[in-house]
Structure formats: C-alpha cells, structure tokens
Image (cartoon, rainbow, N blue to C red; front, side):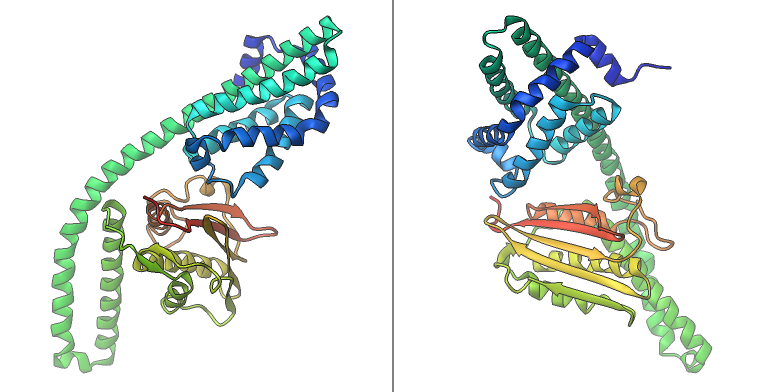
Length: 383
C-alpha cells in the first residue's frame, strides 16, 4: 500500500513512538495552562494590524481562544493519524479563505513553541533526559504542523488561481455572448408587442402562447443581466443602508407557497450601514429564492440578525434538504447548480456583491436538516 503524505512527513522528521509518549506526558503537565497560553497567543496576534484584519478584529477572538485550546489538546494527546492530518489540512484551507499571510502563522507557531518549552523547562529542568526528549518531540510535532498547513495552503492557493483563470476566460466569453443576445431578444420583444395589438390576440390560445413567450423573454433577459453582472464591476452606490428596509423590499419579489413561512428577527435593531441598497436587495432576493425553492410546498425560512462592535451578522436558515458535501465545496462557483432550471449564477453573484461591500458569506449545515447561510458585513465602510 502506498505511503500517505502524512506518513511520509512523519518519516522525514523521524516522528517515532517515543515522541508520541513524550507528547502525551507533556500533555498531562501542560493542559491546565492551555487557556493561559491561548490568552498570550491572541494578545500577541492582535498587536499586528495585518493579522488582526484577517481575523476580523477582536470580535471572533473569544471563539478562537476556545478553538486553540482544543487544537493544543490534540497536538499533545494525539492520536497522530490520518484524521489528525485531515483536521490540520482544514486549518490551512481556512487561512486561504481569510487571506491570512503565512508569515503570521510562523510567528504564531513560535509563540506556542516558547510557551510549551517554558513548561518543559519548568517541570524537567532537573531531568536532562526527559527535558531533551520532550523538546525534541515538541519540535517535531510543530514542524509537522507547519508542513501540513503550508502544503494545504499552497494547494488551495493554486486552486484559487486556477479558478480565477477560468473565471477570466468565462468573463470574456460571457461579455461577448451577452451583448450579442440582447439584439435578438430586443427584436422578439418588439415583435411580441406588435402581435399583441393585432386581431390574433383575441384568440384565447394565441394569447396564452404570446404571454408565455413574453415570460420567457423576461427570463432570458434576466439571465443575460446576471451573466453581465458577474463579470463587470458595477460601482457601489455608497449611501445609508437599512437592511430591514431592503429585506422588506426583497420579500415583494419572492412569492412563496401558502405552506412556507418566512420569518425575520433582529433586523430593526441593526445599525445603519453604508452600501448599495439595490445590490443588497439582489443578495436577499437570490438567497430567499433558493431557500423557498429548497423547502418546497411546506417549511420555514428564517432570518436572524445581530450586531457586534465592528460588524453585523445575518443568518438565513431553511428547513429544506440541505446541500451535499460534494456540492458544498463548489456552491459559490459560477455555473454550479443542482436545479432542473437555472444556470448557477445566484450564489456566485451574492458572494461577489457581499465581498465588494467588505463582507463575507459562508455555508454551514443546519442542525437536523436544512441549509444555513451566514453573512457578515462591516458596520463601518471599508476604505
């Protein structure tokens, strides 16, 4: 059986059973200090503007401190198997998503190295053999951590670059085709207007088909508009933005079956933001349409909103079937869709608009079943 990457890395740094034993012994000595170490760790990180910006300031640090304690638990307790490797890979991918420069990661790892070596010196200062083996084991596992994170960071960064190149080609093609399609659609609309004014329109069946043609022309025009919106940088209209008003406006454009309940709470208490109401309305419309279609004839679509010191958070949930793991990884890519009708532009356009407002959107499964989208927007305009 072929050697896995993690096995190769462990062999390269000579990570042996003796190292595992030394780390587990260190875990017993250090685990009570993990919360204090996490305080030191994030105090130092938040002193650096670049790292603080990537981590969205201090608003997430409370949660991240808890996560770091869990990370240290597994670091020293193991098991150091393929599941461990996959978990560490996810950390590298997260660094790509938040655009965290990797030199901050090296500095952060050095902080952990210093703090854990301090504990080793404190407990093994009079036992040279144990001190040496503990220091050696700690150095190996932290080097493995860095190697894994850098490997996955590089892989995901290359994948992002490949996606950017595909999007560039896609944009050139769409720009050309989109503008060319406007002309025949305009001719169809004009001819349809003329036909509706002729005696033919008194025929009930003819009228029905003329209406259907009109509906499809509207749909085709909307697809062309969405395609062009994906590739052009429409300037944002920076003006006072009340998300509760934008939400109410979006609701008028998304019909829902009688059995579907659409709820919202917390919007009225949000601060006034700076942004483009028209483009944010498109965000709500696209997310609402997806949610209503997902729940079918009966279910619940719920939006909850909250405000922090430097951002607002919107959580949209539905009681539909949710999204599979395979689709989840590509759901924000253009032309990716699971619908029988549709070309997969709704979520990519949502992501583009939110990011142009300085925010982010992420998907996470809803407890039980269903979908859950988390939108974060800055409370103050980005400069």
